[in-house]
Figure 1 (tube, rainbow, N blue to C red):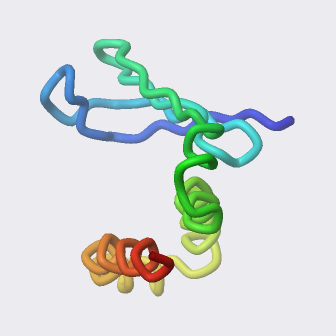
Figure 2: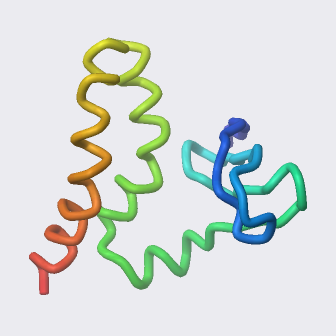
Length: 102
């Protein structure tokens, strides 16, 4: 089993502002996210997610941070130039995939 942590600036619903957070990974999957200012934690229940959501989509969403890091390392220019479009279109693409199976 591999464990690692990553720091990120995220919006905290308890602090009601962007704060530093620690994202903890276990075997390349997000295990929990904790606000470094107030201590609020969001734990990811992988069993619940796997029971209630389409397996492929869940795997891709949970592995997205690792895949994005790899893309950045391979070609930072391409990553940065494609990011705005991807951020805007991703929610639509995910919803399209979810409802495609129904």
